Image (cartoon, rainbow, N blue to C red; front, side):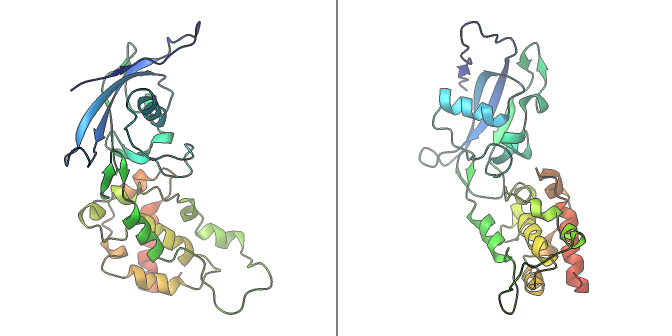
Length: 259
């Protein structure tokens, strides 16, 4: 396996002693070239305090322009750069190189493995088809539902009522939780943790009147009862949402019809 080497270009007089050598082993897939995916190594010199996203940029811009991945804000808000890094779902823009590999004498002792998230069809390299994920999100009606005439003043809500669903408002739709779920891997029809989290956000909103509708949607055979409580989703969430807890609260609301 060829291992291209990149040396970060330093300006005259610039100290590069802080740079280390890291091998990034990336799972590549290009349907126009081959029906099979393969691993490719890239050895680069980089500051270990940089992020995996910075390393991917360096590889794409200076070594292989065909490397394909998604990213937008690069600050952990858009959620577009979710990928598997060393076997765990993470955001590339929030993962520091020094936190995922051991450095000894200026060289990483093991390669950093980067691949696309699981459970969704890989389109190219680290890019997956997000359509099924977003369809499940749309299916739970992630918007405020009210009845009657348009209000003449703001719909007020107490701090306590807002706190009830505060945790699930943090979702950035990165799909890290859903694509870490073994049930979703085996059956793409399952709504998945992210859709349930976003349903939770409105089911428990005191201003909303569509809770019963959402609960019936999640009471489907591919809904909330498919969860096996493995906690993978909670571990994978880059925003620290207690995903498994939210799923259990939706299950309880289905049984008691109290929310």
